[in-house]
Image (cartoon, rainbow, N blue to C red; front, side):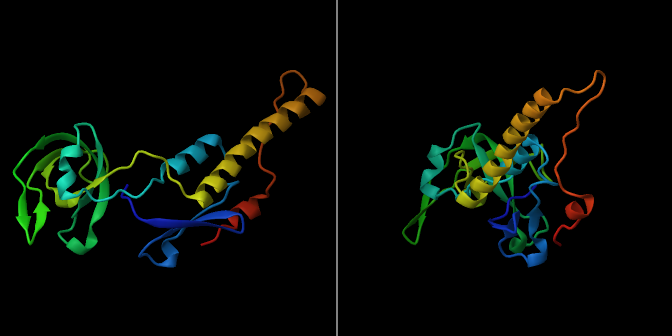
Length: 194
């Protein structure tokens, strides 16, 4: 459930998700036929991507409102080198006077949040600006991802139109059903890259 920076590319017709700072064996591969077998599968995969959540700048804490979606750094194992980022909702802001350190404004406000993902899901915490990132609600704007998912999604519309036309041309006998399935053999579907 944690958020990680990643790059995507289409390779041999498959979508490859490459997580930054991870080895290649952590890459995820998505077969447009076997893994994305319905419009719902495409929508679910699309929902797993979003724009990067920028850190909240100390001077911008006043921009936050209760109900805002945030992405928070979570130090699960007490190791600052292993921070993971999980979503939360802002409940309240306790305003505090800002200070200045080496000529830079420092926010001393505290934010009451309710975790919506991760190991603290459902818990409430008070956090400082240093762990807060702001979720950008605008859709991801990666042309590779968008084109791949749109092409897969459009395939379902074409399949439905072709199916409707073939059913009109050759009606099924009463009591029987036509079943649609991708024209790939089982061995081709199992030949996923590892």
